[in-house]
Every structure is written in C-alpha cells, then in structure tokens.
Length: 216
Image (tube, rainbow, N blue to C red):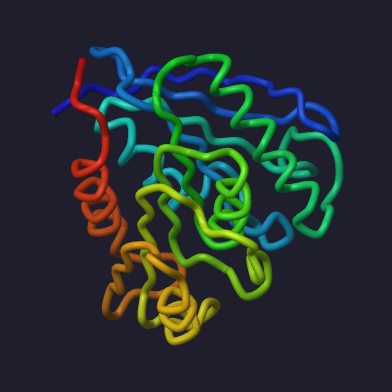
C-alpha cells in the first residue's frame, strides 16, 4: 500500500485572478501521468474538498499519478465571481496549462464530478487529454451540443438513483455518441455516492489500469 501523497497548496494565475489549488503527487515514484480534477457546482457548495473529487484524485495518486484539484473562481480563496460556466471552463484550461508546465512530457488526464464533469468534457475538446473520467456529468445543462467529442479513453460513472442527474438522460446521451465513452451505471447509488466512494474509486482505478502508461 503506497504511503500518503505529498501535498502542496499552490496558486494558479487564472483569467479572473488567482485560483486556489492543491497539488498532490506520489512520494515513492515519479508520476506516470497527471490529472486535473474539476469540482461540482460552485453555487451549490462545490469545492476542491468535495468527497467525490477527493476520491477521484486519490484514485490517480494511488496509481502513481500527480493530481491537481482547484477551486473555480469565487470559491474559497479563488478570486473572481461565478460566470455561468464559461469563465469556469477558462479556469480549468488555466489549471491544465499550469500542470503541463509543472510536469512536461507526461500524459495529462482530465476528471470531474457533476458540473465539474461537464466542464472537463468541454475542456477536453481542445486540451486533447490522454484520458477523461467523468462522474455524474451534468451534460444537459453545461455540455450539451458539443461539436466534437473527446478523442481519448473516456469513462462515465453514473448512479441509477441519482436525484440530480437523470440516469436515463445520461444513457441516452452516451448512446448518441460514436464511438462514445465507457459507461458504468452503479445500482442504488445517489448523486453524491454516499457510502459507495470505495466502489467508485475501485471502478476508476480499474479503468486507469487499462490505459495508464506502465510505471517507469
């Protein structure tokens, strides 16, 4: 079992001011890859400390990857104000640029939960990540009408008891994509994965095991 990751509080120069962020990397190995993880809706309590966001970051770190979580504008110590998803997409793009400068030459992934998942999908269209992990993506409100889908390994995890993101809507959306992401529907799981975070981490870890580069 790997030890706890090294953690560093960092500030990212975002388009609306400084963005509060947390950078984590494995202690015992050089990172195989990196990931930017996007948190849920800023106006409904979403922050980089969200339990699902934390679970996603740790799934990557346990696979010897570096993880960057950040607060969107106006959240925590991040400067700026809510911008209907447009500015938040620019925040995520700034986080991607920061992490690529910090760890050049290794694959970069994107991940997100709910609103953050939709933002990650939108950013992936131009950032061309090595992979994408989206949990309960709020696509109808924040990522509908994409001109192209991400061209990388892509996992969607959705609970079938989600009270905020309709599972049938997610399935219909995935079925309309070609070739589309890998979809895992977890029975009896609500939007926040209460009591099921270990199962979520295992699902994400299994997917990463198929697509991450081998350890150096």
